[in-house]
Image 1 (cartoon, rainbow, N blue to C red):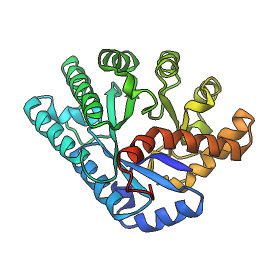
Image 2 (cartoon, rainbow, N blue to C red):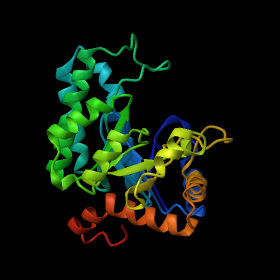
Image 3 (tube, helix red, strand yellow):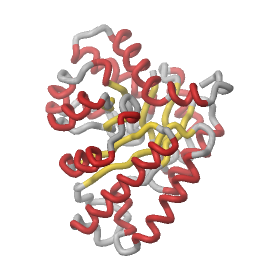
Image 4 (tube, rainbow, N blue to C red):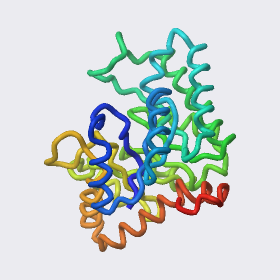
Length: 281
C-alpha cells in the first residue's frame, strides 16, 4: 500500500517519526507521501524524504495559509519562489497541497481569520500559480478543496492542461457530484481517508467512484478512522482499506492492489521515467 497523503513533519510526530514509520511498514505501507502546507513544512517534508527511503515529498502552500499574505501579496510571490526552489530537490514528486478553502476554522494560528473575497481571490492566484509550477516542472498535483467547489473548478478549468490527467488527485474529496464529474472527465484520482468509516455521505459517494480512480490516504495526524485516538498514523491505512473493501463488497487484496497501482501511476511513473537511475523508487 501507499499512503498518498501524510504530514509526518508536523509537531504530532516530533519525537516519534521513526517508530511511526516502522509501524507503517509492518502494516504493509510501503511508501508515504509527506505533504507540505507552507514553505516551512514543505522544506521539512523534503528533508524527511531525503533522510528516509520510503518517504517522498510534496511541496506547496495550503489555501488556509494564504491568509497570512492577504495584506502582503508581494510576500506571497516570494514564498511561491521558495516553493519552486524546493520542487527541484531530490524525491519531490508533487505540488501540494494547494487549492481553495472557504471553511471558517475555529482553531487557527492566523489572527482575525475570516473569509473575504479579497482572500478568496488571493487563494485563486496562489492556486493557479502552483498549477503552473506543476506543469513547468512536470510534477503531480495534490488538490485541497473545502467548501469551495465552484472556486476550485473555476481555477482548474482556467488552468487545466491535458498533461495533468492521471497526475492529479482530489485530496480527501468532498462528496460532490460536480467534483466527481470533473474527476472522471479529466482522469483525476480521488483520495479516501479515515472519515470514510463514519461519514455516511462519503460512504455513498465512494460507491460512484471508478476503482481505477481511487487512492488511499490517512492525512496523518488528522482524519482518524472511527474509534481511534489522535494522532492518526500511516499504519491505519490498512483499516481504511479493509473498511472500503467491505463497503464496496470486493476482496481487500484486490482493493489494495488496485489502489497501489493507482498511486504508483499518480506519483511515480513520470518520476521514474525522468530519473532512470533511481531504480529503488
